[in-house]
Image (cartoon, rainbow, N blue to C red; front, side):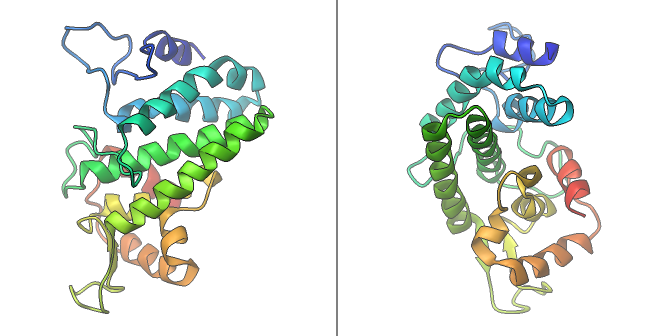
Length: 220
């Protein structure tokens, strides 16, 4: 909980978070606003603290900060829900993944957490609003990043991939947000086709780094 308090104390009035906490403006070691793939640690820690310890007080203490953070991402996102802000992404990965893909994934994760937290706290209107925006972001994500080519067009087992066909792009698209909501692939492809993509990712040598190592572990 100390980490969460430190993050909350570093939050700007408009909800933006730095990517390093504690944050000192003008000093080396962080930016404000931070990369969404870093700042998403706030909703991630809120949710995992709750699911690990069952402490609803954590949700109550950080709900306003969470809501402000998600709203700040929504303000930065395009009309189609794609979030282009960011600069780290899948840091020093072997194969590049578009920043807008990793940032939009992080935005969707934050929305999924916010929807579930507000539902637990009995804030039905907020929960429905977050869930509606999440559905919009999923549709935008699939429109922007899902490629469905004819079978074998690029030598792929399924002819289906996300982004530049990096393992990170495909693994993030298969991730079910810790069971909070359906994955991008499930929303855009359905179960059978999504399973084909799963096997393509699983049977490759790893070319991921910081973002997808944990997601690949959770999925595979």
